[in-house]
Image 1 (cartoon, rainbow, N blue to C red):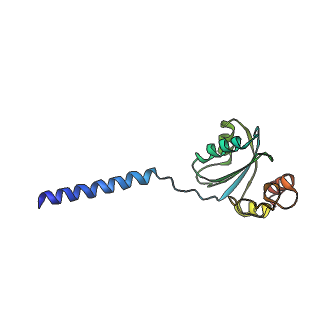
Image 2: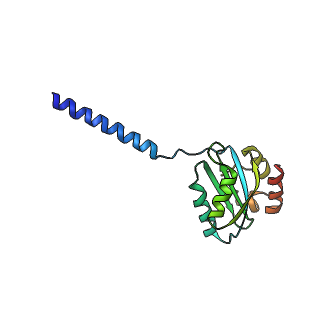
Image 3: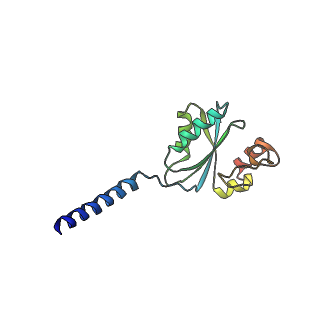
Length: 147
């Protein structure tokens, strides 16, 4: 009876320890309560987009990234409690691209400016940057003005 009790206790302690260790290794998903629009130069192809996305995803607090290579914009949905737009621009710069903060918006302002939520792909019928009229130039103006 004592051996059974000891082995059961050891099993429970092992299971609890394993769950605690795994809980610390699981990265909780960030929630975007702000959107940073970064004007970025030096991007030429989808490999650039992948490198930027990979660099930003490593940053704690990044919920979603969108890279518009042709328009020169990197759009990042992030948690303001865990990171800052300056840090995001630096991460893009560290990946080998010149990047500056173009605008910081709330998700609501982003939706107003683009007609879609951050992280939702633009439909195939819309123009560049997910807008129907004006393409990237008009969209950048709307983003900068928070329209």
